[in-house]
Amino acid sequence: MVNVPSGTIENRYPTLCPVSWWLGAARLSPDAGRLYLSRTEPSFTGYRIQCFDLETDHELWRTDLQADDALGALAVSPDGRVLASASGYRDLSIRIWDASTGRFLRQLDGHNARICALQFSEDGRQLVSASGDQTLRVWDKEVWTENRVLHGHNSPVYALAASQSGGLLASTAMNGGLMLWNTEQKNSGNAYIQLLKGTGNDRFVPLDQSRLLMLPQ
Image 1 (cartoon, one colour):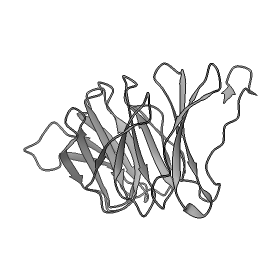
Image 2: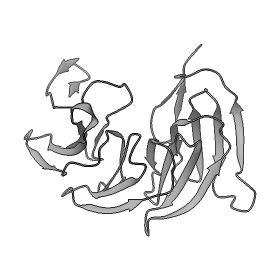
Image 3: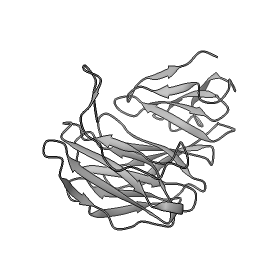
Image 4: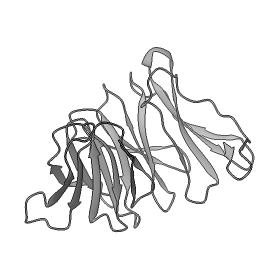
């Protein structure tokens, strides 16, 4: 953990096995009191999610060893009650956890390639997932059912940002294509606007739940 004003390192926590840049994730709780992070075992033999109390530096919980894979995405619901995770290449599901105890709650299936990004809407009603299968999926958090599958990208979808209600989404793919989606128009196809076609990889960085930073070429 880094103190931004002073630029000093305050705490160090064990993290993933450093063999691939996209594997591993860390998230703060909405009140900034807890840190959730992934711990990948050597040779991708599995991963755990750990939760630390930032005031005491004590580990509050850790999950059992999960899958023969490495974790690649985490998201915390705005109310801080639920944690969503997705792993790398082998396990293509999304897993839902009780953020206070680490108890496994539910598994969400639908994607057929690795899941690259997870994002809750600011009102907490929806979870959006982006995948290497070139789709985005919108999940209803109340009942954990899939509301919609969004098609339009022709490359793996790497990053996304959601508006407060989740009705407006922005996503970017590995080839740099940027799309804006209106998920509330359920009867008008995929209802997307292609803002940019392929512009190169790694040009977009999600800033928060409603903004993307576009880097110069």
